[in-house]
Structure formats: structure tokens, C-alpha cells
Amino acid sequence: MNDVVKVGMADLNIVKPPHTIRTSGLGSCVGVVLYDQCAKVAGMAHIMLPESSLGKSGSINVAKYADTAILELIHRLEKAGARIGSLKAKIAGGAQMFNFSSANEMMRIGPRNVEAVKQQLKQLRIRLVSEDVGGSSGRTIEFNPETSVLRIRTVSKGEAEI
Image (cartoon, rainbow, N blue to C red):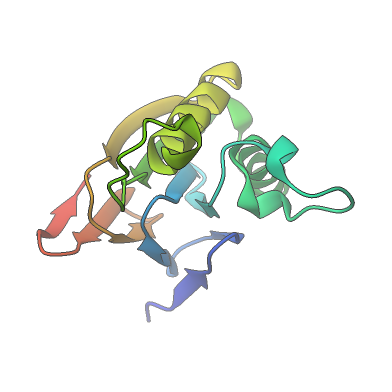
């Protein structure tokens, strides 16, 4: 039995075998997978924006931003039995979905999301083992905590595994 736990946009969750975890509709968003291969527990976040400072005042959705979602994933993984020192990361997404004639930095959401995720992982000393980022096509990703394989379906490019 292989039940798929779905992660929506600006959402996160964790999973253990026999379950897998999937998110769809990654355009400029970045799908971040953190996992402990020995404990066979994994978490996934569908990050929409690089920094929580971009949020409106008041309470924020921690799963929406790179700086808060990764910390929340670590917290949940630790509670589920993962060892922080053993966590590894795989990421996908961060496409530049639209061409803009201006060089406005704010319009580079995909690349900015990827940069923010990598910076956060580096600060937290979590090794990024593989990535499939950039381009201009949407992606769906599914991670299997039993095999540590991230399956990526990219619009008009087919499937890949990292």
C-alpha cells in the first residue's frame, strides 16, 4: 500500500514509509524535501516566497516562506524521530514562468526563491544533495522516504529522478 500525502501550495507535511509525499504546480515556487535516510522520515514544503518579511503584518503562514518553512520542517522531522545532523535536502522548482521586459528584481521570484532556500540550507548546515531548478516549465515532485528518490515530472519534458 502506497498512500500519497499531498502538500498544497504554501503548505508542508512529513511522511514515513509506506507513504510518499507529493506536491504539484511548482512554477516559481520551490519544493524542498528534507529527509533522514536512516530514520526513513521525510518532510516537504511548497515554498512560494523567499522571506517572511514580505508577508503582511500579523500572523503569517510559515509554510509560505523559505526562511520559516525550512525551520518548521526541521522541527516536525525532529519530533518524528529524525536526527538534525543527518538531514539532507533535495529541491526542485524555481522556474521563471513569465518573461518580463524590465529587469525588476521583484519579478525574478523563481530564482530568488531558489537562492533563499539554498542560503537557508547553508545556514542550517543541511547538505543539498541534488536539485532540479530553473527553466520556464512547471513541475510536480514526489518523494519516497524508503528509497530517498525524488521523482520529478516537468511540463513538456517528461520524468526524471534525482
